[in-house]
Image (cartoon, rainbow, N blue to C red; front, side, top):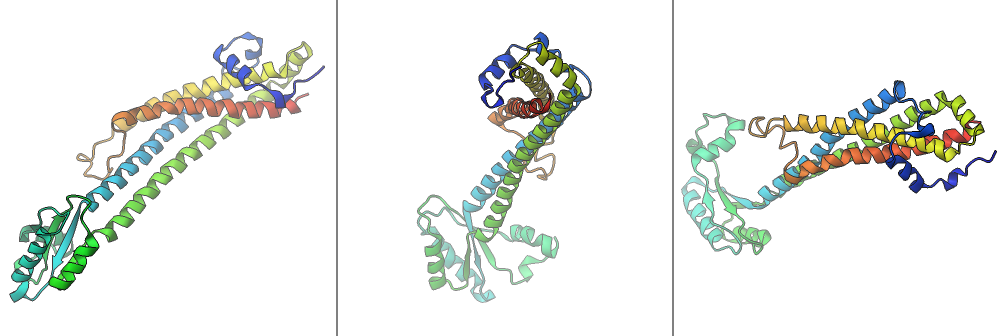
Length: 309
């Protein structure tokens, strides 16, 4: 009896069989219940549940990196250090320079209570700011792209030697880098979850094929083609992967929706979750799971059917 050429197995034929649903003699060789069905459903559901959180992490860290970068890039700080007798005059000189700087907004001299609040984590809340030689701090918003931090720094060095411009680059770069790495970690996690799902489905498909080896031999003797047998396994395991992933995705989305917001969590969660149209992205997870199940089962079926005689 001639056997099918597996290199010529038609994906279009498999997809047509998949869309027809379960039924026919070929499908009855695949056990509808039992260990392989439970393993496929559970692994697909668990991986989809984890994928929802990995996707939420990737999206949240992307928003976090943008927020940190934008907030720190929208203003600069000028620190004025001078002897006590010259502090006030030096500060007024710096304020005048900042008011005439192109692209800069209205400078604001931070009052003593705000300075004390900034220093409280290091010196405690009872620190007497007015009794210590604390430099004056000026917050300068950036109004438009005409702002030139390097030019302003040179001007301050020339006209107010005690003034130091801080454009937050030292703080912004590591924060944005950390958020970008977290986003990359979320993407890598999604890829690992997809690979793990594929491996579990391959194991389940091979177990089902091995358990039905005798039935496959009999079907070949009565004229069944390897394409028909492979299509039955591909269709059944793709359905299981899609159903399990659908349930896991819904549970994951519900768990993310129940997370407290940033205000309730004290900012600890940094906005972990989905916002706006992002809620549609997890709905792609069952589709991806079905595709992973399709190709993983196809690969396993072709390899196993070559060895079954």
